[in-house]
Length: 86
Image (cartoon, rainbow, N blue to C red; front, side, top):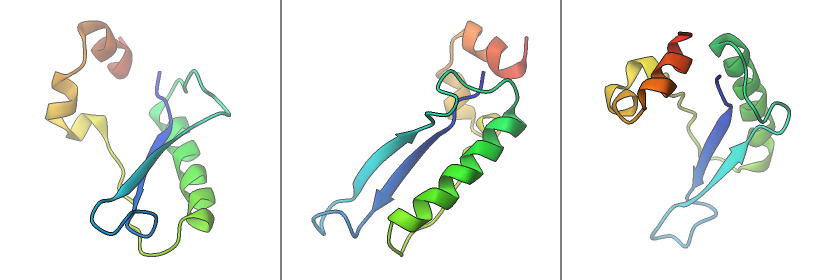
């Protein structure tokens, strides 16, 4: 399963010397999506909604778990199998 979650950090909401960050979790499908394509579609929707709430400046980055070896190393065998559809 793929779960949609955003980590939003903004200097505007911080104290000036540190970032203020918060997580936004998908309430539409809290148990996740069967495919990464559906999950990414939902993430794009969530990003569009968040842009209205978070003032500029901001930068949007997407984590592709297959491109991040350090993330993959943190997963259990079961989680890896779920990720690759095993």
